[in-house]
Image (cartoon, rainbow, N blue to C red; front, side, top):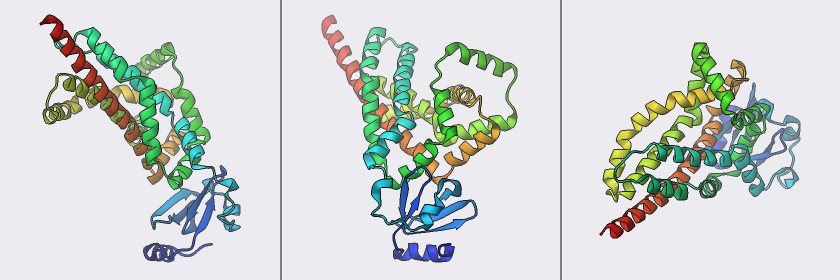
Amino acid sequence: MKSTTPMILLLAALGTATAETVFLNDGGALEVSSYEVRGDVVVFVTPDGKLRSLPRAYVDLDATQGRFSLSETSRLPTSEAMVAEAVELVGLRRLTDEIATSAQGVARGVRHASFPPEVLALATSQGFRADRLYEVAEKAFRSRASRLELSAALVWLRSQLARRKRVSEADKSRDTRESFEAATMKNPPSRARLELVQRLDTASGTSEAAVEIQAAMMGALLEGLETPASAAATVVEQARPQFAAKTRGRIQMSLLYTYKDVSDEELAENLRYLESENGRWLSRVVLKSLCAAMEDAARRTGATIARELRERQKVRA
């Protein structure tokens, strides 16, 4: 057993804790100042003095308490490998593909005299290209990633439950989804299940990301009309509550489908991770990475719209 909690906090405050390694069951490792096994969790102090914790089941206590040297780097994945694996496991490419598809859908629903359908379709297809979205999102993810946080996140992302979630998210069968939604409307899930899904939506930022797509599209249209930035920002912010109201129910139905084969107990386990400090960090990094991609796409789309409209005005003149 390591030093007591008061001692951990004292060492953290003084910045004098000696370096140690907490080894994880997946083969990764965390460099820490000190740690303590406390019931079902392992509490540790990071090298920068922050107090963190992980479920005890995630930690290889035999290796950790054997005091392996930090020089044994064979068990530590390289940063590049960790980022690449995390990007794959969080489904960043799938998410950016979905943003590209959603943007096309939003564009098709726009009815505005200033935006001929073909202009908007061209601008959206160029601005919200899936490959460009992924490139920007991956770069943003990489810039926000840290070895310590990624090591903890990868423990969860490699878990059986996380893998099952990815399988469900990859299911593109429209008929299956429509059948599920029809059955759910006739026989709604329990209140407890709905509350879990609502908390899951909030913790993961799923609805928030969907609202950002719509906000980005509106921003692109306003930029195309060369609306002053301050005025455009006001219009977008005023529209956000409407976007959220229309989006939340659809997203929560999608989450019910994604987790249709997951028990309430397993869903609660997933939620415990997402609501943990590391889970919130991961969701925040993914959301910010997607927002960076959408902001880039909105700028490109707006510039294309403005250019096309000016060209058409020249032709008419």
